[in-house]
Length: 366
Ligand code: PSU
Ligand code: MN
Image 1 (cartoon, rainbow, N blue to C red):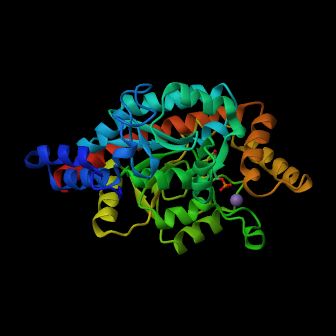
Image 2: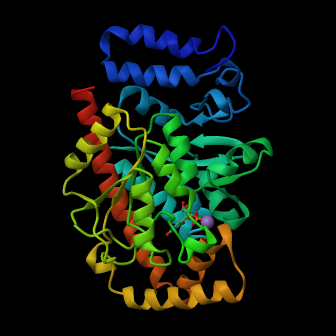
Image 3: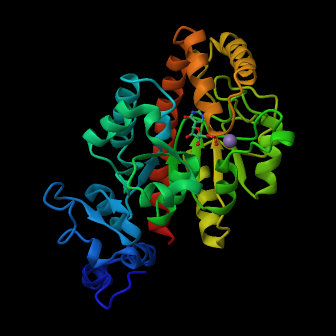
C-alpha cells in the first residue's frame, strides 16, 4: 500500500468515475491496481516519464506498461511471458526474434502480452522493444532472477531476467492470471540427495497464477517433480492428453493428474481456483505438436551426454539448466532450438485462448 495520504489518488479517482459502469470483478481489479499505486512513483514524477509516455509505475517500484495497465483495468485478457527463456534459454539473435514473435502471436489472439523482467532495478510488466533486445543481447550476463533474488536485483539496480518463479510472483502482484512459457524447472535427477528442486515448484504452491507450458524436460526427474507438485498443492492439467508432457516429446510415461480439452474447461478450473481462494497455482502441460516432436530421440541422447558433462565439469545450482539447454542445442545441430521455438509458439496460442476464455468467464460471473 502506498504510504502517504495522497497514495493512489489518481487511480482511486479514476475508479470512482467508473464505479457505476463496472462489474464487481473489475472493481476488485481496480482496487488491486490502486492499492499498489504510489504518487511518488507515478508518471508525473517518475524519471521514466517523458522518455516513455505511456508508462505508469506502481507501489514497490513495479512499472506497468501502458497497454498492459489499460487491459488489466478493463478486465481484458493479458498473458505474462518470462524473460529467462530469452536471456538464458536461447542464443542471440534467435532469442530476440522469438521474444517478438511470441508477443505478436499473443497480440493476434486478441490478448495483451506482458513480458516481465527487471530493468536497471525496476520490475517491469511489459517491455519496450529495445528492452527486449537488451535482454536478448545481454543473454546470460543478465541476472537469472527467481523469487530469492528479486529484492537483491532491485536494490543493486541490476538487470534481471525473471524465471518462472520470479515471473509468477510479479504477474500475481498486478493481477495477471495466465502466464505462458516453454518449460518449467523441476526436481533435478538425484534431487533427493542434492536437494536441487527448482523454486518454480514452490512458487506454484504459493502463487495463484496459471502457467501454460510444454511440461518438464527429461533432464529433470519427472515423476519426482509431479510428486513435489502434489505436495505443494498444485493443480496439474494435461491439455488434451492423459499424460503429462515431457517438453520435447508428448510422452513422459507419467499420468497427468487432471485433464482439460478446451480453453473453456481450463478457464473454468482457473475461475474456481480464484473464487475459492486456494492461492496456489495451476500448471497446464500442453504437448509439443506431433510434427515438431520428430527429433525426440536425438534430443534425449544429447540430454544424456550433457548431463554427464555437468557432473564431469562440476556444474551445479542455477547454472545446470542453462548449460544443458546450450549443450543440447549444440549437440543436436540446432534441432532442439527449432523444437523449442515451435512449442513456445504453440503454448502462446493455447495460453492466449485460455486467457480469452477466462476474461469472458470473469466478465460474466465475477
Ligand atoms: N526450462 C526450459 N527453458 C528455460 C528454463 C527452464 O526449457 O529457459 C528456465 C525457466 O526460466 C525456469 C528456469 O524457470 O529455467 C528454472 O531454473 P532452475 O532449474 O535453476 O530453477
Ligand atoms: Mn536449482
